[in-house]
Length: 314
View 1 (cartoon, rainbow, N blue to C red):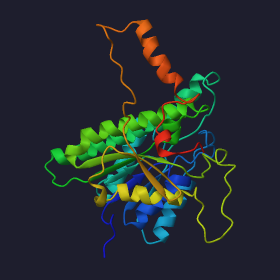
View 2 (cartoon, rainbow, N blue to C red):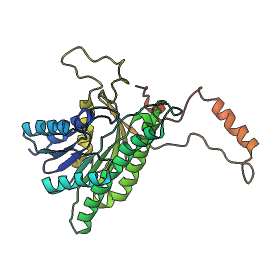
View 3 (cartoon, rainbow, N blue to C red):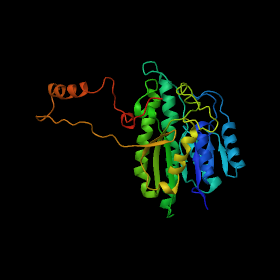
View 4 (cartoon, one colour):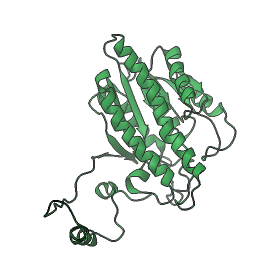
């Protein structure tokens, strides 16, 4: 019996540790050949010397289990490096079929304290990094389709965050980047569907070095036979599914995943609608309509899909 991703090749960015590592191992376990990308900097803020070791160790782990994998050291926020990453997948495995964008950094600060560099660096790695790899993968798939190849197969899985959905006071750069990734995903889904490519985004919740302080108060299970509810291994199977032929009908979607739960996030819906009694609104009319509406809502309530999902900050 063949594996669901047998004969397919994948790129996973930021795959040297944490979520990316779990996702790379999952794709390999499902039969994909994997390019393991990681810049290898030790600091979760993108600091420290780049190192090929994390990516090489994961690639070696995949090969030791009987899979196919190569390591790639590179900053995907650099446009040409991202091109080289896609080229590596094609040269090593003949084509690219799956792109999982996971690489990221954190530089947390309240908006009134954040520096321009802290803003730019996070937007660069997360949002621009997602665009760079997506662009070059899209060029590859579109080129194959334009050349007359039938049955082009392409899957993109992007990484957003509940920081975008529910808000995160100390992460305006991160939340903005993750919101931008959702917009990039839905646009890409529409643009590439005719070429046989799907694009979806996930909001994972997992205990990694990126989130060690966020989940510091969440105890790990003591029983040896229990998987940590915040383990990246809860997230990886969804990525494997979205990368598979079974998910051909899933496109432009946003899914929250953690601890044995997957929630499909619907697009924003209109909560209330007001029409002017005249040709155009006046300040007084808007005051009479909107002020009572918001006064009836719980104090501090903000626009957030988390209200519908029943998610708690964590």
